[in-house]
Length: 230
Image (cartoon, rainbow, N blue to C red; front, side, top):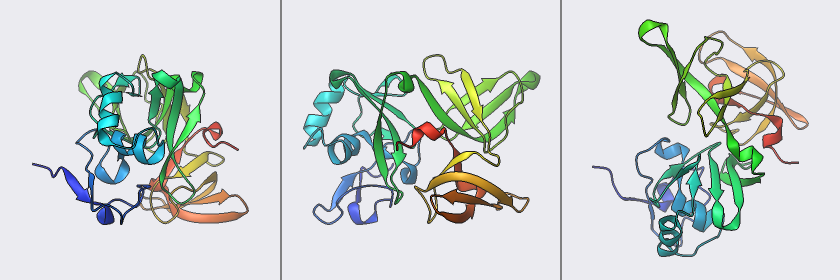
């Protein structure tokens, strides 16, 4: 049985929280994102959006269908949300996308309603099922069936959240706009300039601002340029 809490000092680096004023913090429940790649709805509403001061206030919002994650109502304050998840807060008519700040900590970026209809998902695996059916395994735990094998591991797809259909493909290729989601450069983003190596541990060269960085290819998450607000 998993523990219900963990010490703030031992919390993942991506969590934007105060670590020394309170000893413990609620642990995310098992769900679409592992512990080191998510935050709880509780943390999101209290520590990032500052909508609430207490967990009881968070629970009241959730019990009134106040938080929608990827177009599904969520009522557990420990439900995990992660990178590129779409958050709708109906009572204030606001929508957000979860991204990273420039030091690799989770933050919420306000988006237009039309942008909340779709979500960018990274392909982390593929399977061929019975009768040659192709299944894409996505970064957020989703699996999606596609009719044609036009996708590679490492590419991203834009899916419609209401029908779970592929809207477009964002290829992991030279010229792609990429977010770095792990490692020392987590939170950095820019143009992919080149690849180095031929295997899973190969690296990429990324131009971000006026500098270039090199990091593992597997840390790259292709997104649309509009994801980053100027």
